[in-house]
Image (cartoon, rainbow, N blue to C red; front, side, top):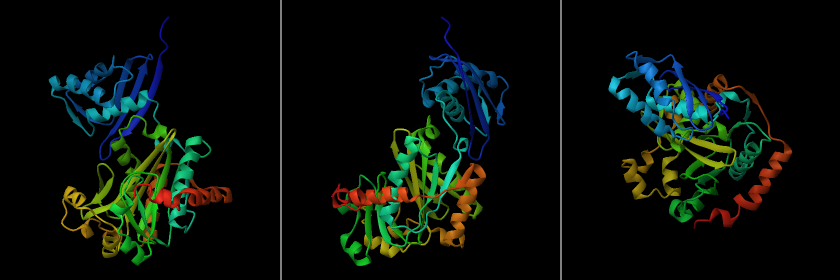
Length: 356
């Protein structure tokens, strides 16, 4: 019996580069036909058919790295010159096509700005909305946080005593909240940070490595910052930085069917207070190559000269110009479910001190 063929299509816009389009046919075991196209530049002419030949016959289970190796081996003898794209981009587009990955722009997004909420409730909403998207009850969501309290939101796997200085916590009335994602501690005073959460179907990051997914999910943010005159880029795994220093960091939590990706960027931080509240270890300082932990973060207020609301407006504009979206809201039922999570989990000693 002849194997049934399946066709796949995926497009990648290389940041700062060109469009790479992969049209792939596979028979359930291997790629039987591959056509790569785009507005890129490629020399010599013989390299173009060599790309398709290199991909044909690859197993559909081959990783992006394995596909890239096939391409590199085929193009090296030709001394191929690729401009505006790379063999990695071709391999990634092919891999994402075979896996049936989705673009962020394939969905209608809900944009939430529910107003000022206590930080524990903002953290609880992350868990609640992540599972709402994973279950299919809601489509993808972008939510901006607003809060007025003073808090430290720290990673799921961090040690409370290693990360927080209890004397500083008590002195400044800090609310410590452990979140569900990994990553580091964030010092968050009301109005001094810009924080948002993305809740996306798993298909949007299918075929991307864990590290690649971070920059992919925040490309629109880099564009929004660029519109404010901030030249920002990613430092793997999860830091957003600029010419003047670190702006913020991202973290993720994954469950079957969905990914939570949230980012906090400093707008106008009190570095001295942060130093009194957080314990920033010598190992981390050495790894980051800095002399003073107080200089690690360079706030957006200083870099842009605009208000926090103007920063958020620029980010929302960058998002809405790229992805179909509409304003959404949280129902009383949504809020009740999140408040229940606060009472039963996020405000408990057991959760807060799960790693003492």
